[in-house]
Image 1 (cartoon, one colour):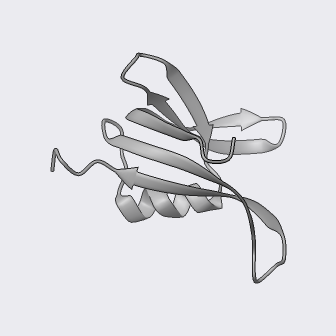
Image 2 (cartoon, rainbow, N blue to C red; image 1 turned 180 degrees about the vertical axis):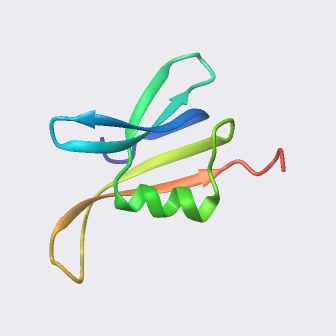
Length: 88
């Protein structure tokens, strides 16, 4: 949902097979112990690479809602991702 934030520790970054083909995903565990699987789109992929996110890192992911590509004029799911750098 737009504005929703998911925060926790990255347990795993991997790939799975879906009905739409191979998809990258991130497993996140909250401080309460709830496990979430987040499928990685192009926006999240860029943010994960930019922040250097790997298993064991703490992150917060905020869903900004649908964005509109200026190049293709297509809608996409937009996110903000912040890595907790306190442990570095």
